Length: 314
Image (cartoon, rainbow, N blue to C red; front, side, top):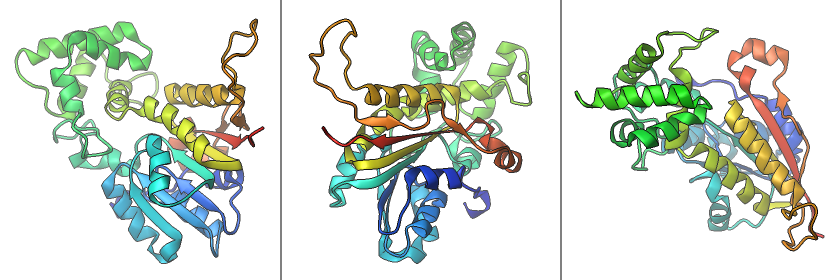
């Protein structure tokens, strides 16, 4: 996995918005290869603590090796962004000073032949971050009804094309299962009649992304994780979320604004819900990587950083 390592995105901005300080307690809820975690530990030296969470057991193992030099300042646990309340309680920690979530797949996950993400892979369709869960991309493609396939593929925001691809999948299944990413990618290309979109991206990219997002509950994890993070943050603690596609950008922004607003009652009526603002959004439109970082690491061109601060209770 080491040869697949890539530098973490927007490290300087992450540290800035988390306000990392000496002795602070921080939680990286998608610790991955440990790049952001390493930077947080260095910035919070000599006694800052990092709690690392990931649903991918192999990523936790890699992070453990990378962060070994920090000794007891690091505590890693297998779990999900949405489970932060439970995980923090298991670790015996009360509140934390900052939470980071870098959403979406890592480069090792995308490029590992055995994980079934890559278009050219001959491995069985998979696309799971947590390989202990039962639902895989193979089950979605080969077992879902036409209507359910349309629902999954419509995460792209293109329902007409989603119906065409769903029809093609169902027709192809009549002759046998679609087992590999390569088979599925070719079917999508044949259905849409082209191999490339306007740029250099393969036309199958966004459809694979939709299936991956459904398999891993990515939008639900983002929404539930932000809510969980808000509950474990200390007053004035910071939440930083990195997202990598338009659908996730919108989901993260919407949830943060909801927690910033507090009251959900109709504006023309007096408040009866009793909700108060939980977060203060610091980056209303999301912050982009610098031009220099986008030049060095083109993958960051779609990255957005959203940050919020925990509002002290009234």
